[in-house]
Image 1: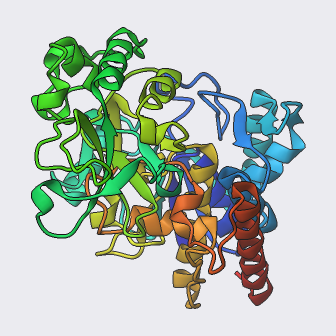
Image 2: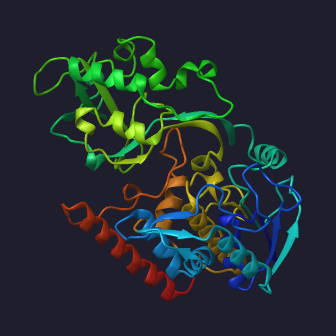
Length: 434
């Protein structure tokens, strides 16, 4: 049986390699060189279009852990990155063109892989892994939309608020409460006095915005109005909007604060919270600077910054399972950034897991279970978690990985312990055969 893999970016290249290494015939279909997106320049596979860095390489860093998991699992992408590495401090950076050339060479020379250069404009019958990326062609985008139905595929200008880790919020300055004490106390409330609020609004108004191609503030829907645009409407606008203190009481004073920033949980584990109403397109550094002026967030760890741009991705929690396969048809799978994983390494991980699962299905074997204690497993569980509201793409981070049973106070030591536990699980999985 032949598996089609559509798209030879990082996710598609990894998927094709893993399938072929398991003795499965693969037809790798890539529209280059006949057609390219505006971001692509090379004819090679696995082209890096934004940076030559695959980010941090230490185990205390979640993406460093993810890379090490993939390395131990014989990832094509990580092997090629290691082979073409250039000096970049604590990051894994590569010779961009050498990296892509090596991936292309290995795939084209594999006896179980046939490469076909053409644009695919329909979702084929399975078995297939679709990894056409965030810049999927218009024709394929339409085909995927028709395959899932209008509600399944999103391609629009979107706004998202930043996310912070729960354990980085200063709870000496914040408290749990729902407005008017309705129901359970589901929000973390971060108060500001008048002086703090006015200083915050001043910096917010004058902060530097990121350029958003093809988008203007005047065209934004009120429901996703950037917080900096609201601030420019008047000094009191935010206090009557997302920072209104009505129905809240600071337990330390027993009084209503001047302004309150509310944090709402973003995952079932309550390890990640979003800043309610803080959609923004400020530059990332400016978000960190200005939002850290909120007293309880002075030392906040941002796991995702707010963005506003044209985005193309699936509503994966409704559509895909933990192995990136269509819940209705397990022989049709997706991989890469279109599934809601953000970043080069994360895309590679999704291609790996989609391929390993697909190979097991075809060969009649049990699908290996990558648990939440591993970064690879946690990513698959994140994109398939139906409890997530307002799903947005995310980089790997320790907050989506299962916490330790024991408490470790120092962050670096805690992260390293999580990483070591994960790698022990990866080694056990590999020893059982994948």
